[in-house]
Image (tube, rainbow, N blue to C red):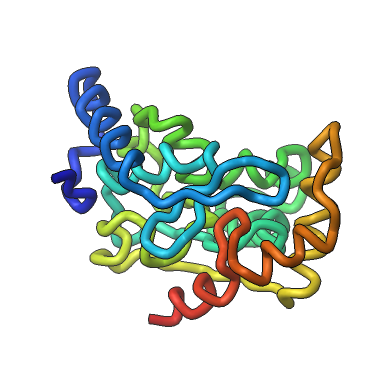
Length: 215
């Protein structure tokens, strides 16, 4: 039986990475699945419907990531204001390091200033090599629910910033965003909204995300 709460030091080796990838694939086979309105698969992990392009990264981070007490994690559902809040958090944390004239926020996309755990650091289940060497107050972001985050985050004193949005606005903006990134534009709004209300959307259900962070 795979224990997703077991972790390995953030300084990874090839052998460790192979072991974790094996555990990820074993656990992945046990997860319930659902199909989004655009035909892409979702995987249910600890109450969170995780898209296929993020599930391996999330599982790998659960096995591997070691939070520090001064870490900062921005949590949100997609299309909830994540991008602008990344810029604000980066500016606050680095207010003594940069001036208004030379801050990287002026010429760097906020997603490059605060990477996602499941999309970037652990992309496709690969392990990062440099997390222990990031500057103190390390900044991360995630679209996942609180219960699905790595155990080390919940057992540390790291700060979690959560941003939410009116569910009607969130669902409509999410639909427009997904349509803009698809060429076939198969999904109709009524089908997408039905899936959204049932919780079968990327990182849904909406209310479970909000209620989970308040535990």
